[in-house]
Image (tube, rainbow, N blue to C red):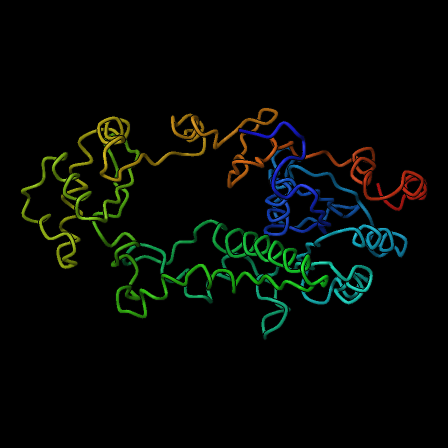
Length: 388
């Protein structure tokens, strides 16, 4: 599954400087490092207290790279970072607009040092606009796009989808996508540019198809009454006899009919007209009662290999032992901690097995700098404690 080389993968040879932040920036850096990019993380000498601090081995988004710790108010440290940037294909930063400029590491300065640099900036609101200088988090960013309003059950408040949609889908993935597009373009033009990866933009982009359904009158504003938001009885999670749940999603007619047949409900009068929205609430009650008759695992045993679109709802601990997850190696153990394996998978240039997040130490910082700076320069900087 994994390449033998410690730095295998399709992005081998790509070099990235990551200015430490929280949320989407580190995960985007992980995506690139997972696929073979060499990433050096520039962290603070003192913890920022931002986000959700935790021991390094559990900060999974920091895997596959090592950090140097610096004080970016120190001119010598800024010069050292510029030396790294001069050799990089891309830079990642997630400060509020203007902070990098005040540190002497803004786009103009960095692109002067390295005209081919792709300068990635990930924020919630974006580099401009009336909210660009206002604090916020994932939940706020998805709120103004229409996405959050659409999520939830009928008669209830909108349901936050963890911080997956804004931080990681609209932020980290779009930043990584933008950086790679910029790197490809720079290899042809010889010129870098700034990538403004705003989470509000990314979330809106992800919602493109959903917004099309709304424009067509196929997705109403009332939560929990539509095809994909728990309104339909055939796209829902149902509680089982043991208090656990199964997900049921036979949208297509042939799968729906097979489910009813296997449930011995093919003749039930409330289940005949699959797309009749007026019958969805009553139909849901019928299925809810049926799924209460057996345990989650029994329903999975009976239906899990059939084309009825049913799967068990597993918690994180259970997911590791699901036969399909095990067979594909989707979740792997690194030093006693469960990690998702790198994705996607490549047939000719597979990713290497990930390395656990590295501890913050001067020795690891020296290792991180090797290959970027000459040994003599590293030792001089170390002696002056420009980094630790």
